[in-house]
Amino acid sequence: MTGTQQILFIQGGGAGVHDEWDDKLVDSLRRELGDEHEVRYPRMPDEGDPSYARWSPAIRREMADLDDGAVVVGHSVGGTILIHALAERPPEPRLAAIVLIAAPFVGQGGWPGDEFELPGDLGARLPHDARVHVFHGLEDETALPSHADLYARVIPQAQVYRLPGRDHQLNNDLSEVAKAISPDKP
Image (cartoon, rainbow, N blue to C red):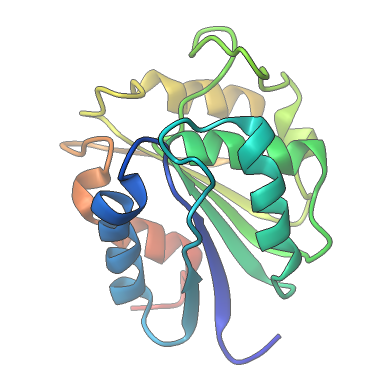
């Protein structure tokens, strides 16, 4: 691995999300992490109509270019698609961490799924040596905070962060995410 740790940030879905919403999250993450991290922020195909069939191949291509020790981060439905893709087929590079931010849970108790439902043994299907962090704002009205509890049930090794006063975009502040990615940073 080079001197900088790679972070792959997968955007949420919706028209204009890449340039008008999640870019603020990426800016916050870059600012908090500093120069020792390379934050990659690819545009997902047809962002206004996200689907597993279109996004998972794009995510897999992006992950194939990562070095060992990289971190993958997914926001909103991008996190849901990312975690499903990881469970279906873990990437070749060894991941240091998987981070979900305000990710809707697809399955019983969460959102209904037309394309897929997250498996009950999701945690066992993820790369075994990767830390898993689930962040959810308690004021999230898009994916209710109970979705974090659903992830905790199927990924028992996950560290869950319930953030008071934070919305679906975590108020565009990813300082807690940066601390989880790089716990040695002051």
